[in-house]
Image: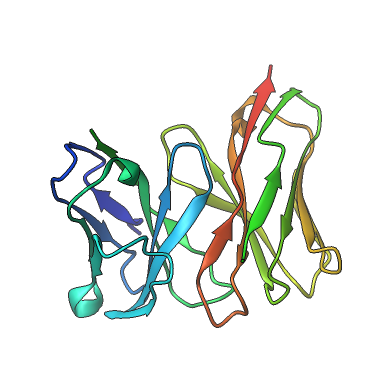
Length: 114
Length: 114
């Protein structure tokens, strides 16, 4: 079974540019999560999709971040315009059920904003 | 607000020794506590988890204990091996099992010296 995949693995952009990250969850997983780890700090929750609906977007930092999951399969996270403080590793995770169910993480996208 | 504190931030042990990582959480409604291991350059992977109706859980050399009264849980690794070297994250689910939002600790970098 293929795991969670993310693209790209690395992205280096200049401040003010736009970047779109993609996540493909494990097939059949209705729940998809985005997290971010900034420079050695904790992994922070951004948002949670159940199928194509945003269940919880309480962790989204501001309106420069836009997440979508059209059709309830893969998801994209767009940052526009990017700021220096957006640098970090963006993780996607997916799970079949909520609550006690294991969240399977992708390898992450390392975003560097110069 | 909701948060998870994790200590120590770094831990160095000799091969064969035990390692203990401690976490405290603030949300008294949390009832699921997973531990993730992230090896260098790889994705975070679940190594063990515990639910609030259980005080201790073991899986070979790894054990987790939970004290709900004190809102405290710990990871114990016995007979450490060099391949245990990694960053370990504790987490607590936000609220009850009807959500998927994980609140992570800051991570512990464990180094096992051969």
